[in-house]
Length: 422
View 1 (cartoon, rainbow, N blue to C red):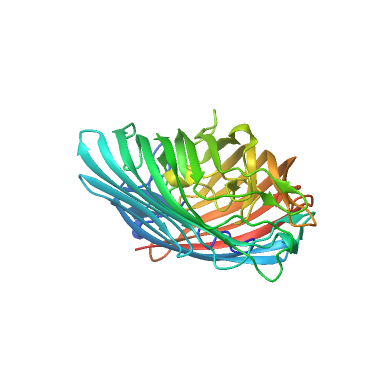
View 2 (view 1 turned 30 degrees about the vertical axis):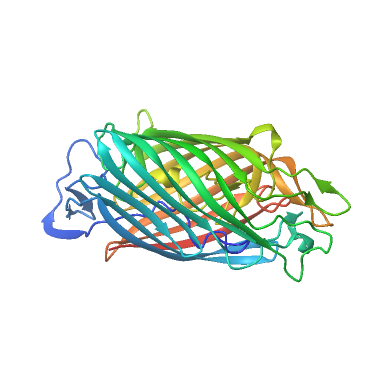
């Protein structure tokens, strides 16, 4: 996740674990009713009149690499494009599980160990430690006085409950986790930082987090949601050991030493009455609030985008359809999106989606302060996902937003990612 240019050197992507495709010389004899190939299942499909064998795969043990980039039209502030590189690891054993997204500067690692029955011990490590500076926008212009280097890292430990749910694939479960959290926050000036800007001190942070995840989705060959729904939410309380007023020396703001973030989501995929399985509807709703408005740019929600969500934890990420890999900071937000997915061929999927976003968005002032102002926006996206040789896949997409991404100006962007399964 890059700095206004790097906010997604990672991306909790829905990486696409694919299978080897073997064409058989015999002609394909279609069944009376078409069925979309589903993730992990053995089967066969038709490609130009020939049968293609789809071997079963072990979805409990997957490692993948994502590489790609984006081009923003027009530029987002001073950002023209964003490189993308991330590793994804999912290993589920009988008594333990790990799910990790690694991109060096932004990482999300989790390890769970069964204690007794559904009771688990959960450990999570997260960091957002981008090497460059970050500045906020006003009318798609980066206000240099807001330029700051900052980041955080945290370790969370605690008990959890996990219950498998239908359709009983590796990613179908109900999880409840209550975690204690200890972290570190840092901030530093640059030569562009406003001379009167008040920066927070480097400090230890501590708190607690309740995480709920429910996933009853069945996925297709490219790990895109095919039918079912997922839902979840987070309640996160955090306090900063050493804090002070922000803003500027002339206009100081209250010191929000502690804060409470509440967020939730609902995601669903299903068929269209009267049409075959090749046609799917996909809908999502996301929302979050900072309790009593105690938010600042260093504890705000990060809204971002990228290819269609598919993987469990990626679905939980607030995904705005008009964004191409970058973060928008918001203290409160609500968004809804609806999309249509067409299976052009058993390994090629076209997705068209639109969305609406309401948010209290970060907006830069000339003196370096950052205010959160209410704004709304419409968005649209078109993307193509397709399998390729060597257990890999591609995603090509275009996204457009009416005003939130560039804070007052409309614009779009194109993205390209290559996902390789090992």
